[in-house]
Image (cartoon, rainbow, N blue to C red; front, side, top):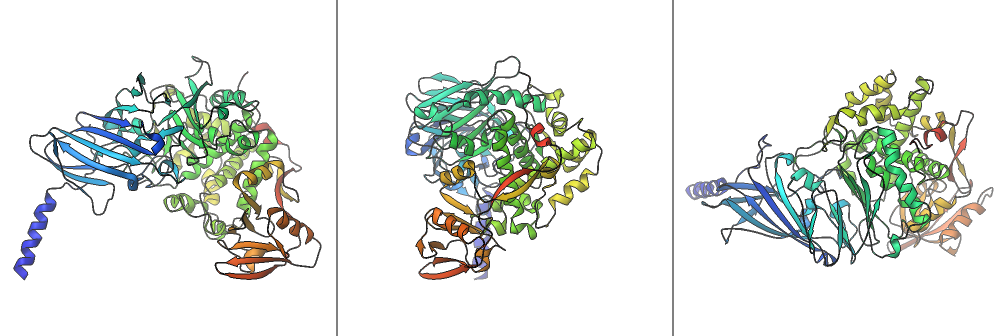
Length: 635
């Protein structure tokens, strides 16, 4: 028995030695150019095909499927949707084996005499919304081709050191938009110039039957900027009043903010569809933003959804040209570290919303409503008493797709919104230290403008926490290290509202939601009474979240339960609001009938303070906030 075990051990050892370990990253350039041909001609079926021709040498080879996707901040590459994988060499099949630990690694043994390996694969785009590039990506009328979902690359090389020759076939009659250089059309097939793996993955393609190109600036004053819009209908391409002018203001206001660009040209890739995942994903010379079909044709949707457009544009400077150490991975199997996301995303949120107002995409009132909503949401976040903001950044890969239930206690990707509050306070601190002579705009010029590298082929310059502190001190000397650390690691029950208050405003609560808040609830089909009784409820009564320390949670009502009736009457959003209003000044509790799986129970909410909706109200300080959001570009 011992001999047989030993023999089997050596057999397994010999067999495993045929396959390479996943190599460390080499400084060398991968020899030869890999061709990738993508067939998206059946995009309506959600099935995409790719063929690759890979220069190789005989012996063990490891190919990787992209795992850690830039901008997604986690191991979100949709390997589960990689299907139909086959390899051949000289017309003969080549066996492959998935790594038993690293699911994104494919091991092969290239036969003798072979110098080119042919690969074919399918990508089955999800039909559900999903998250980022692993979400739904195509409808009957449009699609977004993300190269990371269709490519394999040799392990052990920097993404900048591997060259691909890409081509793409789209459905008959469909047009495309992309920042990928050298697009040349031949029928329904598009050829592109050779590009590094980094540039390829960083350059998605939008394609559709209804595709409109909107030129947003007039070169040569700055590099060309355009918006390539694909929609599920031609009617969705008919903009509501003012939208086109607002969008054309964006490149000018961004240039005024940063003082330089770092792209050859820039493409907003905008999908207008109710049948794809809704999100925004940044790239250096483009962005992949997906919003509901009527976003540009309806003022309600425009106000609710258009914030993604300037946010992703700001990422060309903050996130692409300047990128935190830890998020500057050399290829897509190298893990990311998200600690500085309160800068990468949080400052981008602040600057993006600022540009929303400066361009006219938001009115000053709309900007303040958004800021009030952020301030109230975070000031009522019970989870902040145990989880500091810095941990939401570090934990991004676990929080990315966390359920909404219990989010008030768990916390989510709060580095976006709380980062906005921190950078507003930093802006106000700079203005106070310099008697209004400098602001965060000056920081943006120095940190992100960097004219020595402006207007060149895209490159990136990593930054550290120390770089951030040093540049802030260059603008206005102060103990910025303590300022930032106090806010990042705080477990105070209250949000950092110092910037709001210093800018001339205070957070209060009123008993009437404004039109924007009502529109948002209508679009998202929920009723938000979180600041009164502490519930977020879908219009069908399903309780999405229950806020710790608020009346509903205190009596035992929790997410996943269902609100059936209020004070003996069938639940509707209006009935719930009426009950909260009627309880104000009364001694009678609000009675709610709750379904918990197969059981029903009546709860009494001893709440009598009426409806509460956030609002910014002027305080005794000068109104600097209005100055911050005024247009800055010369007309």
